[in-house]
Length: 221
Image (cartoon, rainbow, N blue to C red; front, side):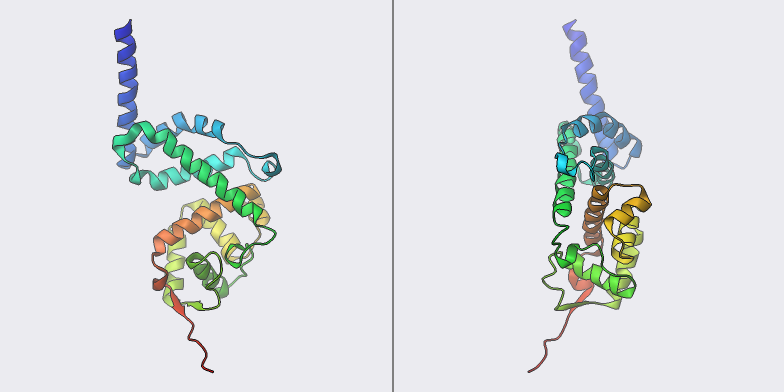
């Protein structure tokens, strides 16, 4: 009996290691299997304060977490399969934390976090500046280059569909999170979460701000 139990546990561990190894190598089916197994317990750990429950739902957090898992799985160490759930939990908790942080800042958002960036060519320039410095501290001393705008539009096209739509609506078209959420069938909290992760991804794709920003020459007295 003990031998049978040992074999069952050993087989389960082998399957986990195998799925993780395949997922890291790019097997989406194996990653989906892992998310189906570990997603529910990760979701059960999430705690959302009552004050945010009208604009943020655990399912919102997990949907973004699953997208991030697909984007980040290649960075996971396949030799540490036993920490996969902890890795997924950390992604989910970071998503929840950033969503609440963004929602909390709505009344007095710094320039780089405002939803209404304006529409048209100026919006792409402002987005590049925001990506370089979300605090807005450098907004008055930098300008986006035409090459930077070209790179930005290409990077936006390379985003996952949900990230791309949120960036286009909130950063390019200047819609509010509520308007974007209504158009996408998402909560306001989900839009904030998607926008934060989309900006993170754009920074990765664009690289150093020196590639797309130029300093404004200081005025001579």
